[in-house]
Structure formats: C-alpha cells, structure tokens
Length: 360
Image (cartoon, rainbow, N blue to C red; front, side, top):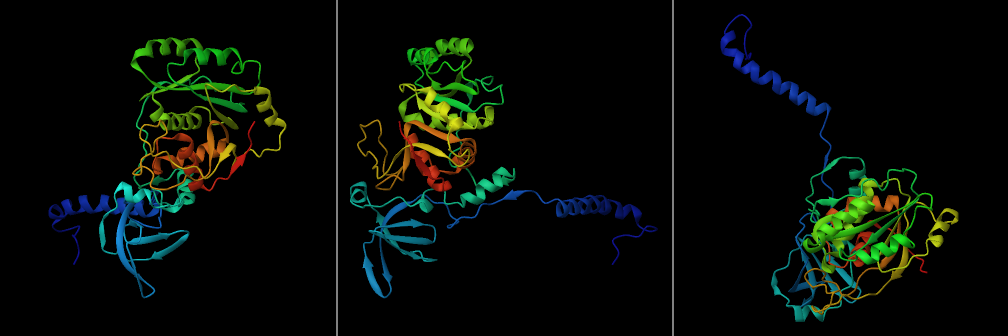
C-alpha cells in the first residue's frame, strides 16, 4: 500500500510526509556518522563495591566452608594464601558480611583487577586520548573549583621542568623561603614552579595578596587539611595537563623539602627517557595504618587489603608529561584513598607504569 498519492489525498498525506522525511534524513545521518560513544569493557560488568563475606561452596567436589572471599556481581574469587580460584558465572549464597575484627585476621594482598573500578584501562586511556565519549560513570569526579589558577606560569611553552610544590595553605614562611632559595627559578632556563593550596577562610585574604604578588599559587576550594592531601595532588596533576601540558618533566615535592636544583638540571644530560617515567624513592610491602587516631589512617572500608602496591614516597617524585596525562585521564575512574602517594601507586599499578627507584 502506498503511503500517499501525489494526485489524491495530498492533504491527508502531508502530516505523514512531514514526519517521515525528517526521520529518514536523521536515520541516514546517524548511520553515516555514528556518535563516538564508548563503554569500556570490564572483567565484571557490575561495579559493586568489594565486600567481605562468609560462604560455603564446593570446589572440585570438596566442600569448603567459611572461606574468606570477595563477592562482586556474578563472580567469586576465593583467597587462601597465594591461591586463587575463579568460579565464573556462579553466585554462591552468602552469609552475613564479616565484621571489622574478622577482616583484620585476613591477609589479603592487593589485586589490581579488583580495585574499583574494574575497567580495561588500556582501552580507557586510548578512547579518552581519541576524544571519544565514555558512558562509564566516574567514581572520583573531583568536583572542586579554582580560586587561583597561576595560569601565566607556563606562558613560555619551552618548559623542561615544572616544580609542583604541595604546600599547606598557612605555610607562608615556607613558600617565601622557597622563593628566595631553591625555588628561585628565574636564572634557570626552562624551569618553572607553582604552589598547590587548599582553602582556609581564616587566611584567604593573605593568600589572595600572595597570589596577586607572585602569580605562582594554584588553589581550589576544598578544605586544606592533611586528610584532603589526595585532592591536592589530583588538583596538581589536572592543573599540569590543563595549564602546562608542554612541560617534559613534572617534579612533585613538599614545601618542607630542600631541593638541590642543580641535580635536577642534570636531567637534560641524563639518560632518563622522556616518556613513561615515574621516578623517586620506591616503597614496597607497606601496610595501611588502621589506627583511627593516626594522620595516615585508612579504613578497611576504603582499602580492604593488607598491603599497598609499590609506590613512590610522596615528599618528592618525578613524572614525565605522558604519565601525568594518563593519570589525569584514569583518576576519575579509580576509587581514591586519603593518602596521596599510596593512591598514586594504585593508579600506576592500574596503568601498568613501572616505578624507577632513584633517591638522593
């Protein structure tokens, strides 16, 4: 049956034509120009938080009771020393979750594939570098705004080394000392510096004056406290990508460290590769602090493993531009913890970036 006849019933057909013709044009365009939307694959497609549970399951015909396991969607991994067994597609009936006392008795090593989110990060980085949209929801969106951007620090695009100095907002004396000593970079070609600060209402007017005078302050509106040090580090990584992407090396350092800048100048003459490099003091087999009175406290809920992966000590470490970029793309999809250096170790493990031990 014809939709309409040109000679007959033209008035009755007009509404149909007005609907169908634009629809056909739209379908033709969508077929020829598909939208670049990507869903990153994952070993497990349901990104529920990791849980400790008791369960009973039969393995190779033998019953195993009360096994400590991780439960995630439809997969179960059983931990027993270094042994691991995957029961694909099986969801065992579980008893109530273990309490914190029970969990402490379990010695569970860090397993990168199970730390949220469980994504293919090689694919994620590739897709994001290509500018395609990802429909996976971020779990670490860093929803803070700049107060000061230090946007003119990197006007010179031939920057070889950027000093990214983490500073407590009230440490005015430390910052001034750095500007007069090792942070006086005016005489060093291709070297720049910025200070990373959080917010504190009590000293904000002084910070505003300091930022206006020196132009080297990068500040966001999260509360400046040690428990937010990971926010400060993420801010620094994002800032480098946005405002100083041409810097070949970024050196992250605390404001209570005295730096011998001449040693860093040797980078130009060194054999260090200029890509894929994270360099500093490598720490391994470190365990989380479970004492909630400690400034380094990390709860079992935030980090349910007995040890951290390898990481670089947070007081001073070096990253190449490509590593900083990859970190900025991956961090929104990796669950944060309050300790910044161990968190960066987790991110490096996720991204398969090796750590080079160079200290002193």
